[in-house]
Amino acid sequence: MDVLFCPQCGNPISNAAQGCPVCGYPFAPAKPPEILQIPFPYDPAGRPSAYPYFYTYKRKMPGKGFGVASLVLGIIGTFYSFVFFLGVTTIYLQERAAGSPSGNATSGFSLLGLELLIFGILAVIFGIVSISKGHRAAKTKAGIILGGITIFLCLLMIFIGFSGVLAAS
Image 1 (cartoon, rainbow, N blue to C red):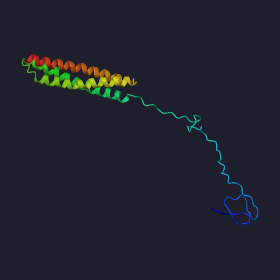
Image 2 (cartoon, rainbow, N blue to C red):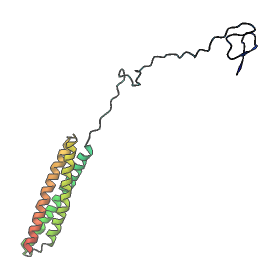
Image 3 (cartoon, rainbow, N blue to C red):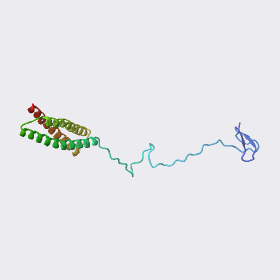
């Protein structure tokens, strides 16, 4: 049991006493300290008020990376398709004019056409995925168009290459 002292006379008093037995000084039960209520500038849920500050966040556009990938693959595929298409037709016409079509060069270029066909197919697939995710930018559509051109040129190269091989045999 703790011993307290009377603030009036200084005599020791038990902890359970309601007042001092010597001088009669009354003890009030201890009250908890009052908590000061300060009004907060936001609602009790803790969210900041909408007025006077507005928090705006720019929403990320889904599928944007697929659109860029479609455009890049379409450009690369179309460029190399034109280069190799001109090479295939030049070699094919030279061999045909010389009268000795061996078919080795054209078959090599037709294999390059098969490899470039992958660029075109991926460009079209990435463009379609980007559009399905809601990204309808011009670069996505351009990637799909360039991918289609790449596919067309690659199929044309493969056809010319294999027709050169068949003509040689």
